[in-house]
Structure formats: C-alpha cells, structure tokens
Length: 158
Image 1 (cartoon, rainbow, N blue to C red):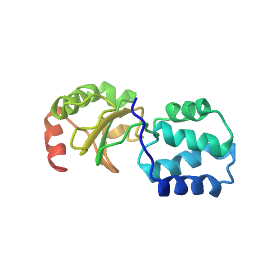
Image 2: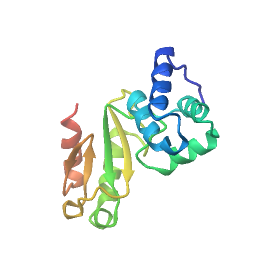
Image 3: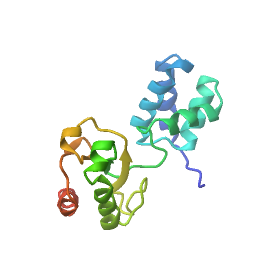
Image 4: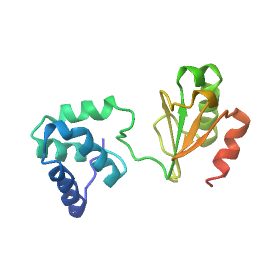
C-alpha cells in the first residue's frame, strides 16, 4: 500500500479536531466523523495520528473505521453512489441495479472511477423501504430505480 503525505496544515487541523473532544477515547466516533469531513476519507496515516492523539492502538481505530459503513478508507468520488441492499431493496432488484452501475462505470464496489467523478458502494438500509430499490448519489435519493434508469442517473452528474 502506498503511503500518502499529509500536509502539515491538515495534520494540525486533525489534531485540533482531536483536541476539540479533549483527546478522549470515548469520543473516537465523533473524531472520526470530523476527520473524514476534513480529508474526505480515513487513510491509514490519519488513523495513526488519531490513535497517537487518543493514546489507543491503531488496531482499535481501524476496527471502528471498518465496522461502521459510514467511514471510508479510500477516497470517494465527487458523486458517491450508494445502492441500498436491505431486504426490501434486494427483493425488488437492487443487486441488478448495483451491477448496472458497476458495468457502466467499470468499477467494483468501493472503487472510484479514474476521473474521480464517481464511486460505488452498497449499504444495508437507507430507511426508505417503500421506495425500494433505493439509490443515493451524495445526499439525493432516487426511489424505485430500474436498470434502465441507471444511465440517466449517471448522466445527471456528467
């Protein structure tokens, strides 16, 4: 894995995020949210700094980051696409919709297109089961999505 170089100013801001929560271990999730807002994702280097600031093992930070689907360890695209795979969505064809996004964008789940425009992920439940299958692009929600509509959704953001 390639190490990234964090700008000194960003490291300072990250330490300020930790300090805002008094470097308390029990504030890890809040700190991770702040860090992800700052960097857009949580690379290993960011997790290491957080672990140092909170005096916890990096493995503990990594465990929390990988447990919660909201956190990402790789950069998301400018337009992150998420397809709900909860029971209602799955039963109504979400897997085919997800496959169509992957096919058209030529990416796998968790990947970002080479131009940085789109990333594709799946999630457990959006909480809009009546609109199944549900797709989100950023904060915009699309309901009752069919595979025929996938290209139209992508075109909105091209």
